[in-house]
Image 1 (tube, rainbow, N blue to C red):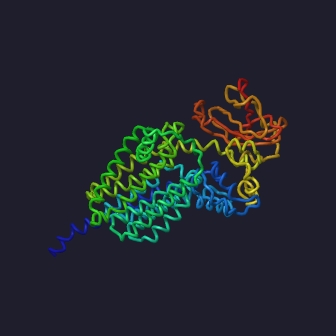
Image 2: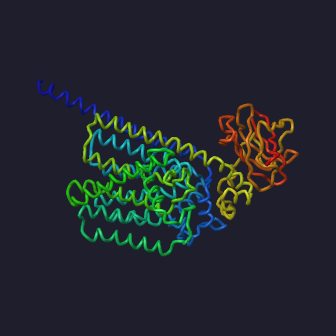
Image 3: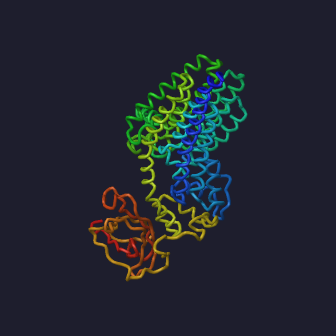
Length: 541
């Protein structure tokens, strides 16, 4: 009886810990589900130029895969795996962007599970760390990766394969590590440093010498081969000057990007601190190479080294004053390197100073709140920047070559897209405007002129095969859709409404529209509540 009473506090504590572990597990699922939800409610069509450029390169006009171009560089980097994924999406799913965005989230979850396997802590502390990792890996800072699959499939497969390679090396599975690194190497340049990260992990574990030398030697060959074969021209508006200070700011901003949405100075300062602490922890691990503590830290040190190396590559190859905020390190997709660095830092610190469960939970909540909240503004900016490209499916369906070129979609992809039966050539495309399609006529009785004080087309006249923008305030509301018609009401074009127009604060700043203009066009009509409002051109445009 006495023993049972003595055991009661222990039982209660274990039960309480179990509940916390379950609660934190459910919390960890929240950001994953939010990212997945965002990925399936995004656009059906891929609207970014890289998808169509790559698809045009690797697909014949008859719709078959061209194997030779698979091995050519894209943005001066290997692009084999993303090219295959783009083609598979086009051939099997009609080019549905949402298939690949959901796959992007799934791959990030794979990386999360892999990192979890390296954690040395247990119980509530482990569950709290995993929850923080989940909110970091699926932070809104990375929304660019699952809003448009072009970005997600370019970056995520290579990075996830690199994470798997490092984790495998941490567990002593050298063959799997080398295989993952090899597939990553033909996926994207972001996987290039992983060979050295794998070698570092194995060296810290005091593995046999050949296990360390092989990945390091392969890494040297890979880098040398890339330097010898890469195109000479600069990519993505990157500057070619030396500019060490500007490049260092980009590197540190990448490492600190999850702590701010749009303030480069904050990202640079935090990133520099993160980098400095990681270097210190790495040096300490190297001094105790082969010890039980270092073996437990090896994978995290390797992951940190990989993340810092990716940040350095971004600084070397993507530094440009043309980036938003003047610092390319704040671009959404690049935050993935900062996420991995932050995860490694947390894991290394937690193993050195175990955190009691009662402290781990509020600390995890604070980290989650800061990084997640600061990311929401960046996610909104990403969605707003992509919104005007919603006219891409209309331009494709109309086969408007000049309009496609203006949208940076290669017109040369049209034969392949039609041969593959991709959307919008699969018979399901609609203008989504009052049940009217190309070739239908608008009833004149449903049309009325909109005063220029309430909206204008940003052009004095409508020219066929172009993309035209404008705005319309319909009694304080944005239109639901837009059409382009001939003077007698024949529908020859269409577009989208409710676009951000910072210069027009009316209708909540969403008064903008964008349309693709067909031949013989005379009017732009914005629809709301059964009425078409004819928007006139700007006389001073």
